[in-house]
Figure 1 (tube, helix red, strand yellow):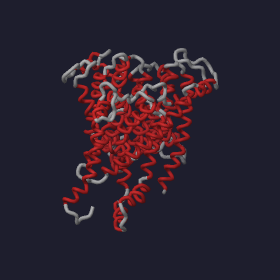
Figure 2 (cartoon, rainbow over the protein chains, first blue to last red; figure 1 turned 30 degrees about the vertical axis):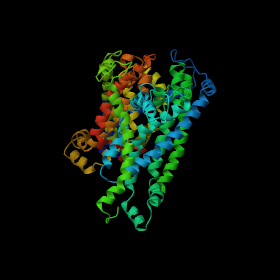
Figure 3 (cartoon, rainbow over the protein chains, first blue to last red; figure 1 turned 120 degrees about the horizontal axis):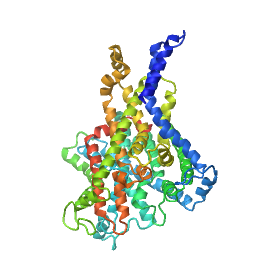
Figure 4 (cartoon, rainbow over the protein chains, first blue to last red; figure 1 turned 60 degrees about the vertical axis):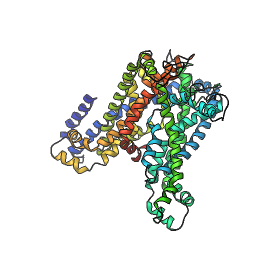
Length: 317
Length: 279
């Protein structure tokens, strides 16, 4: 890399004597070259590890590409028809959407509650802020492994607590049925990410000028009125950002289901990204995995465009 | 908060607030505290049958390639990812903030566009691509990929850090005969240090905790980073699940993250304040 940079710089210098009238002064031109040189590592990274794979995944999605044998030539559109015909395709989409809706609603509601609880500089607010965020410092895989133990019907504490309280008679199988597996995963995600979204909302809350609240209070507005007609509307850009991040993250859910439920019971919790993984590394077909990846990319781009539009509108209002 | 209320009624008025906040704090802390306690307490079916002790951690030390191996793998990947992310985004942020060059806006947009593409969409072709580059199943290949995923946030963060430095500072260094590299090293580097700490912290947490990238890109269990190794440990003994060793693994995984977060909280929060998340 440094060699290339030096080459480019000397090339710039070499052309300088031939400079004609009207071209920028040498100092300016060498600054251009220097800018290019400093940006070169970024350019190399973006090209090799982002643009190239993006082209490659397109090509793979149109080719017969077994994991072990490699490229065996174009077979379009077979990968796309294969994957949409797969018996798990529609269930995975349905489940991913359901999971996304539930997580987004529960997570953002709780994050807003937390942000409101710790926004004022009451004694202890800093402590609570840190405590609520603490799970966010963990990795998603670590948190999933933690809850896997927590949910254990034999050694986990949750089942025993519920039994001790007399709420249930037998050990609870938190991951045993499709519904309980879904809600158990939602609980894990809410625990892990609520503090993260709380922080984003706190930043938004702090941007609301104090005078607005003062004026409303002078006018005799109640707490509920202030929340509904001041806090919520002025917090809209932050809420929209949370929505964008939360929806995108949930649609791409993988770690939590891979570790906690392995897609079970009975494939009831297989997400779209898990289906990509299964196609590639269990059915050993990179072609169909790439086709599904392209479909996910298209869906996400569409969704992000729509949400960005909403975000901008929220920013303007 | 009205001024005329007495201290006592104010304290009483706050009580429901503290009950709610405190109750939630217990719920948020409980899984962490329980896991730490369970990892050292006795459970049937684990190395720590009864009483308190480090039996589960001994299991972890002896599992397959051994805890030290996996810790080393994770440390190498995290250190490489942090170094690559810092290096590339420092130079890139400088270029985007202070220079004009052809393709500048396109390159910046492309860097941010990494955020728009799902992780999994890129990992499938990266698996093939790293194979062609002879980087398959290698910690270096994994670090390069993880650093790429950090670039949108890191580049944005470093760009605004450089933009916040007054131009006069850099110009006086240039007048004093420093080249741009000298100005970067002597004058700008100290000025953008907080930005670098934030970028480094995010890169470390991401690399240390990443699961799906090593799952796809690393096939040799000797080279697995810690999260993958702990998940595998659990999967391999399917018949008799060793919860204790998993709990110990979670502690080893979580402690560095929690410590770093508590120490560098201020720098972490800056990542949120910067608006870089909006990228």
